[in-house]
Length: 388
Image (cartoon, rainbow, N blue to C red; front, side):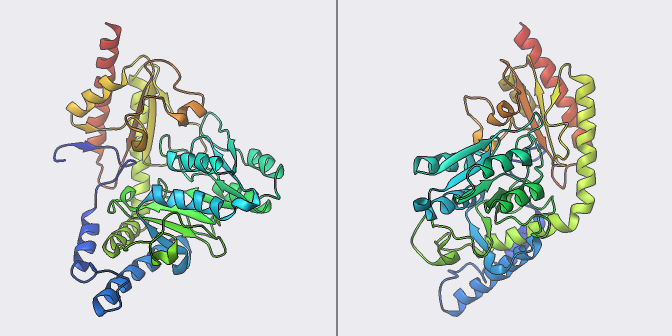
């Protein structure tokens, strides 16, 4: 929206103009059914496959290991439930963390109702999983088909997990490793040689790409049961008419993120540090979530403010023209607190306001200054209202 300072890129990053241009360039040439055998269908299929190859190259996968879906939630469900349902007769289990996105957490719980074992790993006060804890859990049942599902970077507080170490532990015990890479995709090095995960999920709209298209990277030899039926598209993993134009947008958004990373990441870190310093100095008793984690997402800052009404704060910020969320967009409107903060031992107090600020490639230093002023004023006003 015009004149709105948008600091909710962790929920969705607005479509970049370069992505729009790339998608517009193939409208009329690729907006056909890619499964059709005529020339128009073949052209759509070629467009789709070029985009698939571009994405595969970034993650160090082969083109045949990249499957398009409708988004991150779909990809997570296919990874978790597809793995378990394929192996139900072999007494499978899932090992996941207490701070996963609801797409993984609820899929895992559904799998448990269908007969799978479920182990939930704790995290420390910074939201990090201990590889030694994973080692102990896997050692207790290494003969069972096991899926370890641990997110690469947390969507609420930004903690980056030691994925390479966790993958090594999982593979040593013969387990399959899935990571929800939605928040870190395009910002972190996710090449297969960096951390050889078996299943990886991501979505375009967190990168400035289009809404409604995601990917599941599934390494050869990792067999999944389809969740939906109706066609052979995406080799049956996610059947239905494919979206070549969306795939082009995804590939372009990812290309921009990767090529611009060396410019944007230092700026993200600078903006995060600026806000963090101001809030610690000017908001009494503020808590910076995950500040002690070895690594955090560069473009995300989550703070907790005791004795402050959250609804009043968010309304004041919206009226001031600043778009900030209180946490995961998929849990907005929930009547319970954040399961992520609860797992970290935080946010249990009444009237504990959580604000998540996340930046994009076009966020300016002036916007950060203005947004900082607005947050400080909104918190002061909400606290005054609560005190009265």
